[in-house]
Length: 214
Ligand code: G3P
Picture 1 (cartoon, rainbow, N blue to C red):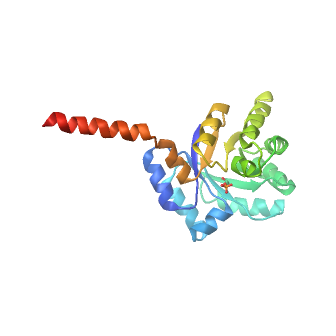
Picture 2 (cartoon, rainbow, N blue to C red):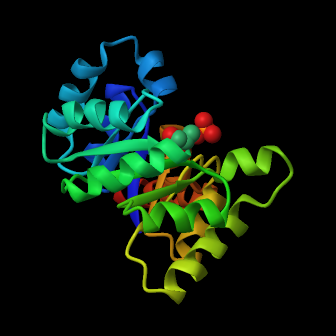
Picture 3 (cartoon, rainbow, N blue to C red):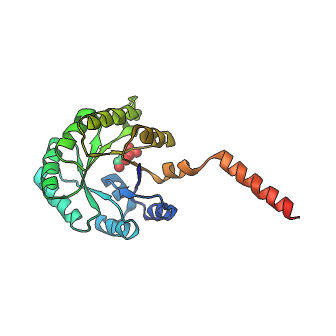
């Protein structure tokens, strides 16, 4: 499973990249706004750190405008993936962008039917938001299972990018189901490494080593 970081914070991206486990980056308008940087500058800074897919989301709501906006991002670098919302105009834009040879990420997916339509329109990635479904007392990970089954039934190549991941269990479940990618905030990715028994075990090893040296 590929691991993307979901953030607009350059320090977090730099830190994760230094771990050697980072495959790509997702951003969205909320995260980009939170960074406080002009979007073009933010993309340039991310591109200088990560050599992998970097999702840049369009804010236009009409297909032709989404295409135009998406192309301005995609022309910056080959690693830019054009992120498009899962609405009817978004489907139209996906089709056009795919025919033009661009990579796309269809975002704000909350149902298996939406995921199937996005794949038919040619999306490179589909981003189902598991945490936001959990927020409304719906099983977010069941959506990943359903999409995996549907895509496998038809040999669909669109990659499942589990998004809105909020916990290490989202990560583990996504991997068990066979999600192609997960994107998560820095706080969640850091939790994946930590285990109290690792810390206790290391402290014991080091104290035994110090005693033996005396
Ligand atoms: O980038 C899309 C998604 O990951 C947002 O997550 O936590 O705002 O629902 P969240």
